[in-house]
Structure formats: structure tokens, C-alpha cells
Length: 175
Image (cartoon, rainbow, N blue to C red; front, side):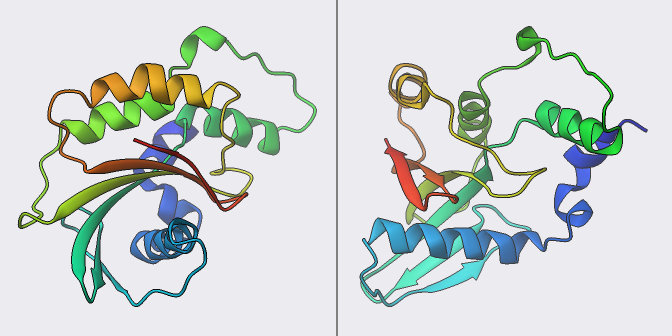
């Protein structure tokens, strides 16, 4: 069995995560950044297996968040290969990699979500960790403004799309 297939199917189990708990943690960190560290009153309810992922309940409003880790599974496969075979030289072909951020947004835009007419936001995030972590690309603003933003021109289902970096605890982009 190829490692890539194993990770794609079961990354949270493989890495010892509980996906709903992980999403709650990521969203909590994001909300602290969104509100500039100001205390806000809210509760987070995981909606697994339904989508969107999390319902944020605040006294004045309820809204949903769909979360997606920005992760290229091909890179994980390469990292695992390097960790399991130290010293072995590998080859990487740049032509095999796409724009993960764009691909995730396109995929999420094709889905339908049960929101009961509440606002829905998409939170893409770069995670921490050797295998499943990622770093924002140098040209992230070009990707966001020139490639992702045009995808949203025709009645996006998302009120906002955010890109969040867990390492720096920064919101890198908002649609």
C-alpha cells in the first residue's frame, strides 16, 4: 500500500488526532486572532459528521465555519519517504504539484452545506508539525488575489474565506 493513500484516507488517525477536537482547537486560535485577543463570549459545537464543521454560538449571532488544512499530500509522501529512509536521495518534480489553496477552495465551493440560513465561513489553515504542517508560499497574496478571489465572483456560498497560519498565529488573508 502506498503511503500517500494511507495518509489521504486516515491522516487524523495516523497522527493520533481527533479531527473534531483538532478543528475546535484551530478555530479557537483563529478566533483569538480575529478578535485581536479581546475576550469574546462564544461556544463551539463540532458538527461531525455533518458539514459545515463547527457552529460558533455567540450571544448576538450564530455562524458556521468549514475548516480545511492546507496540505499537499504529495509533500507528505515525500516527507515520510525521507524520514523512513534517511540518507536516500529523492527526486521532486515541480510539475506534479498544483496550487493546494486554490484546489481546496474549488473543492469546497462544489459542496452543499446545511446552514439554516446562517453565515458560513471557510477557514483554510497552515498547520504545525513535521508531517502535516505547512508554510505559506512566498507568493500567497498573488495566489489569493489573482487566483482564489476570481473563483468567488459568482455567488460564493461563503461569506468570507480566511487563510490562517497556526505557526505565526496570523490571519494571512481574508476574501
